[in-house]
Length: 401
Image (cartoon, rainbow, N blue to C red):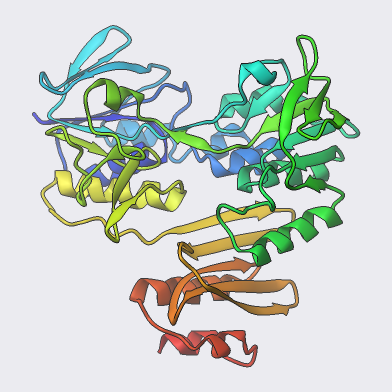
């Protein structure tokens, strides 16, 4: 009987296992995860879960009975230590498991602040796993001082939680503006103003020299010599693809585990999907860090294991919740040369990214219609009149006809 082993019990791993069964695969499926919890959603960790609004079981992607009903074997709290692509085996907790097809859904790990600058002090946290958030939850007490290093979406989401819980929050961003790597100045301006309205201090063009304290965080020293008190620190300085196992097995790495358009790696019978994988995109390679990509790419891999032989067609989308603002992003803005603003209309506003006449991406704040229309236009490769987008009298849905 054929055996598919999935290394990684996150969003991509769970999506791949479920899709295999949905497509009629009747062989053995084993999903291996290094965390003790069953596959769960990560985005709410830095929002509803940290706020205490939802419990752990509400994070689970499926109830425990699903895996039993679907005859999917879960091995949790058991990191894989080695892959032998020649023998087609993986080693986990001392056991050697044979596979017919192997899917690497090893996700990503957060970048950590170096120990040389105090990154190993007690009270320094990252936001990636249940254990990370459980460890820091007790720190969120009204009146305490939180310093966040990094003005990307993870850092800003943590800042929003801190502000809502009554903490004194400061965000440090080394770049000239928050969200510089991922968004236009208009989106940065929007979120800077939003956080400022909630009492968060944002320091841009501000580097971290070191974290101060003996044994535990007491403050931070900035690159310009200023010192700020801090009761704890959260590092939101990006993530790294989980490539160590693949690299040790001799699989080609290129900004993640390199795959072809079908999801195959350089090793026969080994596939990759999710945050850890890079795939062909517009003449280069792309690695996407999003729930949408993890699900879609993993399901494409499952279909190709079943013989579909269909290239993965990425349709990037992302979201972020901060305070009462829901940001929805469609497309990729790389190479834009113009921003068209629609709104504000009430609390809704959207920023549309163009390269010449081509619509590349949309950032929609509290505007699900702009997001939905923009996403469909981008996926269909449609051109659209920028003036019509900016005109609030334009019925956006009419642009799809």
